[in-house]
Amino acid sequence: MKAYERLLNYVKISTPSNENSQTVPSSDCQFNLARILEKEMNKLGLTDVYLDDKCYLYGKLPATKGYEKCPAIGFIAHMDTVSDFCDHSIHPILTKNYNGEALPLGDSGLVLDPKVFPHLSSLKGRTLITSDGTTILGADDKAGIAEILTMVERLISKEIPHGPINIAFTPDEEIGSGAEYFDVKRFDADFAYTLDGDTEGEIQFENFNACKAEFEITGFNVHPGSSKDTMINASLVAMEINSCLPSMETPRNTEDYEGFYHLIGIQGDVEQSTVSYIIRDHDRAKFENRKKEIERLVAQMNAEYGAGTATLELRDQYYNMREKIEPVMHIIDTAFAAMEAVGVKPNVKPIRGGTDGAQLSFKGLPCPNIFAGGLNFHGRYEFVPIQNMEKAMKVIVKIAELVASK
Image (cartoon, rainbow, N blue to C red):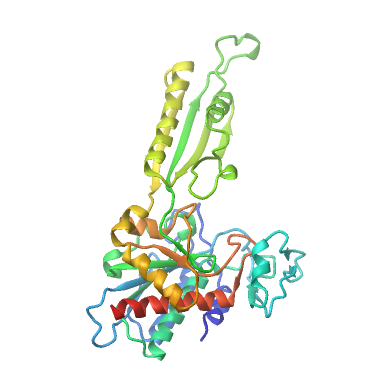
């Protein structure tokens, strides 16, 4: 079976994670896909197939005879999708020999337009899988799942020599907790790759350092007619805090390795306000300085308006995986060599966000991210060229082959 054929089956199974849930997984529907994959893995001949009670699915492809001492490689993808635009069934549409022009998405009235998405013009002649424009597609990251299982099938059917191959499919990546309960010991790989990138040739081993900052501001409310030098308006203090941050260091005004402060929520009134930010930077020292600046603002507000006016909770979320990848850069070199061997130009790209691979790297499993081939993730314009999926699958087959040859 080809990777895209698997994808067409997987995307029809609804698996949105739920950021408001207190359960693991955050939505029971993720088990629906996990159980199907569990059966497929057993049918392919994988061993030690195990689905745990938190919806983490593991399996192993034993090494070819004589290659048992090769490093154990892991390949990982996530089963959940975002919760946006998936409140009803997903209907994938296959468009063969795309003409490079505006492509209507079913009868939705939406159009994939090269004027809006310039990368479309470079995909002329390819076969695109889209949704009907009323939902997401779900190639993020079901394309990665399809590519990994097709790789397994290819290694077996073509009798390609390989060392131990370990695979895992995880829940809840889209809400940032996909690696939280990942059993690194059970997985038992020396290093791994997530297949969760987009653009063909993409390889990522750098991501943001990240934290969340939440201010609680307590005001003092008196009658506005007699509030001279007395009233403390908590909402205005919140606005003042925001005005003290660099106005150009926001997501809208930054790219590549540039960090930012991102205001994600502000609510309240005169007496009480809450302000929430996420803070991001690739450089660890700059990241720490950003946190110090936030702490300085708390001190400044309390000095100006009185002790206890502002309190702050800072919570680190994840760190730049480069710190853990640099000592084992051979795994990046292998991915480069695999791409070049199958005619894909490597494209190193920093992740302006997080990844399960970053958290796994800090758990002792070095885990960069490579492309799965989809584009325009997290919205109704999401699509994937089947040729991109085939190339991603060939890259990971070649990775397995190259590691065994060494």
